[in-house]
Amino acid sequence: TVSILSSLFVKPVQDEGLFDATEKDCSEKRYYSELPFCSIVNQQRLQSTSVITDANIDASPVSKHFLNVGFHQDLPKACYGGRHTVAMLTGDGVGPEMMDYVKEVYQLIGAPVDFEEIHVNINCAETTFRDALLAMERNGVGIKGNFATEPGQSSRNLALRTQLNLYAFVQRCRNFPGIDTRHQNVDIVIIRENTEGEYSRLEHENVPGVVESLKVITAEKSRRIAHFAFNYAIRHNRKKVTAVHKANIMKLGDGLFLDTCSDVAKAYPQIEFNAMIIDNTCMQLVSRPQQFDVIVLPNLYGNIVGNIAAGLVGGAGLASGVNLGERNALFEMGTRNSGRSLVGKNLANPCAMLLTAAHLLEYLNHMDEARQIWDAIFHVVGVQKIRTRDLGGQHKTRDVVRAITERIRQNQMSTHRIASHCVRRGSLLL
Image (cartoon, rainbow, N blue to C red; front, side, top):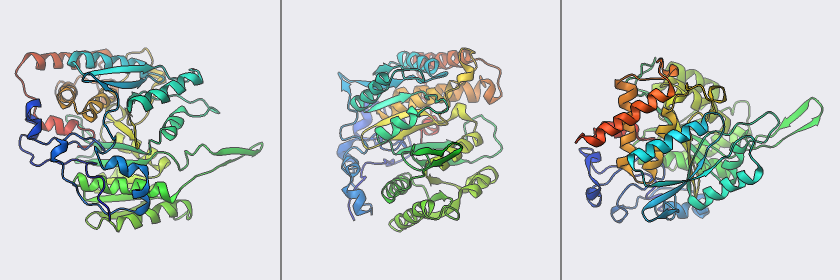
């Protein structure tokens, strides 16, 4: 037993008025965020919590970072004169357009963020991609569009995640205020192992027409993601963790993942644990999603389940996520779509990327700026019903952005205080 992850997840001391504290109140009130590894709390008042873990986890470098501010030893790395430097990797498709909207909104709210912009896309040189890796290692935090991958081409999305060891992808799917969906009361957190499994990039053609692809599952990485999921559940008052697998067929690979998760679960008796086969999981998600709380999965299954869950609560245009590792956090849209067919058509939904940008501010402990974005999106989409076609509306991309910026200006000019429920709705994993 070791005492680790003391600041991995911060929960509130009290709910009433929690998010109405001004900046001057920060020494007296704790803020909490369900964004993993956020350290939105007065560090001097943070109390350690003993968590049962595994000797292998304790010996890894990741535990050393968890002991302090949770994700970074000194979060954030690149902060000069009160301003943060963030890597911006524009990506393909509508990525560059969405990044322009992010910069526009950040400028409007006065976010203390400077972007180191790297134009990584399908046609960029390898040196540009290396520049992106260096920018992430230098700054510790970034925001990205999706990188397109042509058939036969090595995926730069995978390369980025593996080389930076961004081992966990966290996506929360819950009902969005004002959006009508088939299922209500959906609130699912998907925790996806990000660096191995079917996406290990190990495949070859033995002879023409015969291809072998290797699925790599290791006890070490399975144990790491399982501990991550259970500690997340504890810190966020979640009740259950579900491990998704196909061990009935892939008895060695998925069997190892399932056995490892089951062993880790014994260290967390306060959290209910169950396992479910991937095909049954997909059926249960579309028929009775309320049964799920936290889901931990290998790489490919996480991709599938994440997209299904996003569809349950409004679609790709409202989904955001974050890739997390020992030293870096990289924010992107939850379904990782590049939207290449929508380039220049003024049809793409900007909300997913703007929500992602708000979560980035939350991660940097700029809650006032983050809540301005959340409130504006909730009001425009949920109340004014200014929506792009994917959400059943007829508005263009620019119409939605214009309405969001106008809402922000209105709030800045008034004494309006954003309701705490808007902040709770907005937080990536709240």
